[in-house]
Length: 205
Image 1 (cartoon, rainbow, N blue to C red):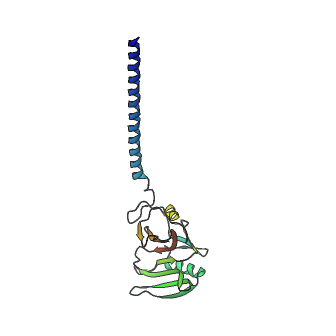
Image 2 (tube, rainbow, N blue to C red):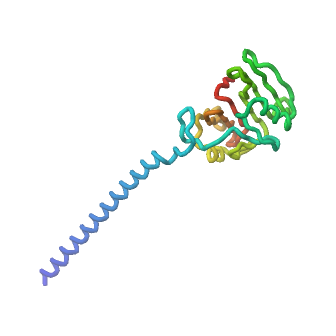
Image 3 (spheres, helix red, strand yellow):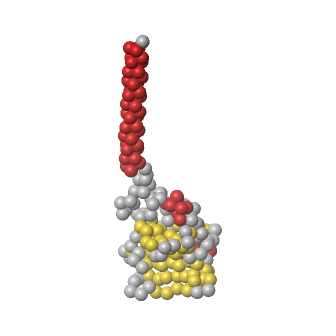
């Protein structure tokens, strides 16, 4: 009788050790799977966007098109086409020469002392080229659906991680996205877009 009890106890002990051993194996296997998954995410998770001149591969595809006052404008069009389109939907406030550079600047739709739209046309290799378009007020929607008042989260959803981020204060910053034919920068104040600026890669203003 005693022998039967001892055998039963030994068998129970063996089964417990076997179960504990299986549990540890499962835990180790899960850990290994997690590591592989994390490595895969690092390799593939964020790099699905368009490859650009500065080597970034995390940007969402985008073009230089935007809508201003109901009119579609392409930043990368020739300067004559861009200016004619803007002139058809915006009121020119003032213009002038650019110091030390072959080109001119133009302000449109001025509210008080602030223009809602700023444009710079400059010479690039002997050709008039739009160097900058900056929108300071409502009336523009980018081709990726961002406008003045959009949240920072919306910008990152539409364009991906910024190529460059510049913090001006705890609440305010600028984020830039650099593509082959143009750059686009969003000024962020209190978590919302306050201005949108397109620039030519050779613009140094």
